[in-house]
Image 1 (cartoon, rainbow, N blue to C red):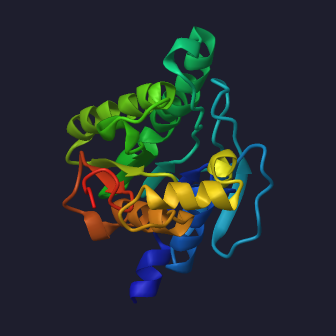
Image 2: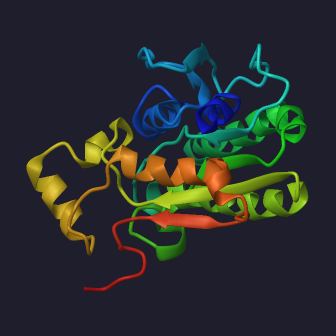
Image 3: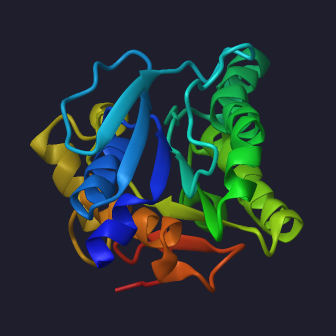
Length: 238
């Protein structure tokens, strides 16, 4: 009976063809949920209980077609990691980064909001970074965009309560294609791992488990929160 109950729930994963988004789509499908996942440039794999559709979050006119009338949750996973000194920050690069990470989330959530409100106890999950609350060198651009995501998380959680819950996950560096440039040698992997109290790099599945928890009914009394999944780097000194 529990299995059947899960199959009746449907989640939308934006950016579900690679990295954390793919790990999340797999997690949800393996748990028996129906998943609709989007892809843009990365071809999607074949997964049980997952339907992939092409969607460009940068296109204002893009539409998510054939969604169910009631959608139990959405995770917005597209992001970017561009690290550079503050003096090299260009307004056009900042605007492009903000449009991908924040503008795309706003447009997409606005589009599916009727589907979310039609469901009971629907959930929105977005992604921040530990750099927002901790502060790291060369993270100005990503911290600006992700700081806006954290503000949006709390404001939207207040506005949509009690119908829709809204939370975010704030990971540290995770071994995904997005972070490939930062982890493309054993030396870089070791150096980044040693910065964390747990002395290892996070896997996409580590972050996906937290996102799945916040999406599903397992977290039905949690909203407006930023959950850190970071190997202890934001709060521990060892």
